Image (cartoon, rainbow, N blue to C red):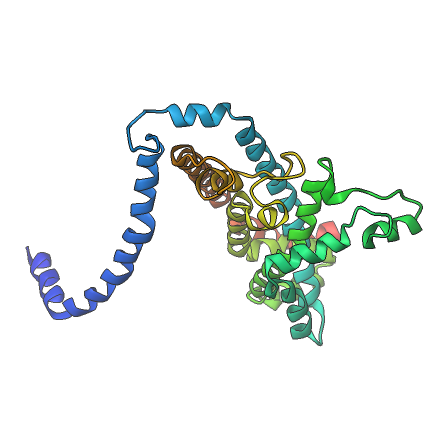
Length: 312
């Protein structure tokens, strides 16, 4: 009873401050919760607003275009994770190791992020020109390799898009990793060096455990971003996903059925695809957090004393 009176007293004294909390709460309800609930309801309706059960989901799952979009999204997402994260971490470690001009290197890697996606696509269309006189094909010809079709080929278009997105988005993760490296105590490196640890052992047993939170954040946000791939493939092929359906993604599939003017709009199918993507992102994010949270960083830090024996 005394705790309840104390709580009410605090609320009466500071109730004005709680009014400020209503602003972000109202924004969250209006721009996040309500659209989510509305999209969920629309996924069980037709264009006339009539409830039709799971018909939209059945049509979507049997649609070859959605299957292609799902496969392409997962495939390009895995390629992006396997290339972006290791390369960003390696570059961050290299920048952290230099003595001078660190800011210059950080600016250089962040420059591609300033450019719009349309400008980036125009540049890489020029680089990936399928003609023998194209920039990349010209250098390949100097090495005796025949010209490649790149973005004009269903076999190489997805890999070409991953390379383009890697160039544009790499700097963001480099800066995040670099910021995480600043929190690693230098004393740990000094102790490991005295014990005879080499550079690889210092990175594996000290750097990675100490920047674990940064690693989790970069990994989870990158997973979410690759599942929502839209702007690069849309700038390249609009809503068609050309060549063939090699650049069709789930987000492009949603756009095709909801906002595109060249195709018949079906908001029910678009909403069903949106909820499927939402469930996929939630499942992968929850799985990532569950698996990463189970790793105890302190176990690796305690093994620093063993590095010397392995390094000798």
